[in-house]
Image (cartoon, rainbow, N blue to C red; front, side, top):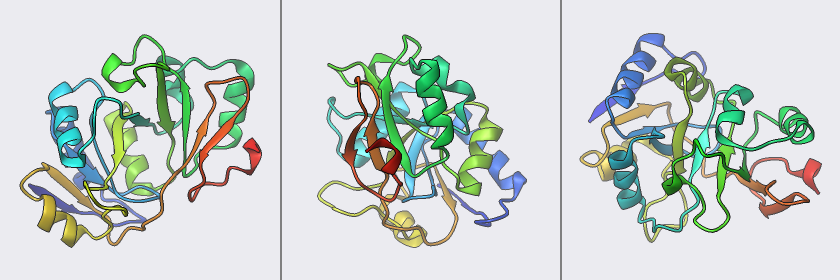
Length: 205
């Protein structure tokens, strides 16, 4: 496992480039966000996604999310009208995952099997932002919560201890938080708050 110790406020471009190379090669990466640590891979990499599902103990019904640097890629992955785009623009970046109708560009295995939706998140964390901008595409992402545990892993030392042989890259931005994202479903006629987490959802009430 490649352990990259990255400055949380001023990420070193050389280290981020190393992580991006490994992601493009099909590796599974653990990285910090503005909520808890997350585990991710390239959107189209089926084998890496299956490894993430095994690590997290997820079944085929799990609603995956993609994490993006900004809204520039949103039309590729989600069906949004002008009003919804303006709503998202005024409420991102945020510690919130938005559930949106998926486009045909989204692999079926990433969609909710019945609703055909996808989760989308835009973070403010400097490491995460630089990683996504350098990669030039969104990442498939999932909060790093292990089976039978309630809280996400927030300590890079503990992450390496428990997952060092099961992940390929650990981007260590120091101690994380136990915060979870808020979840807002925008796939229906009216916004529905699915989970109240660290993100401000007052605009959707």
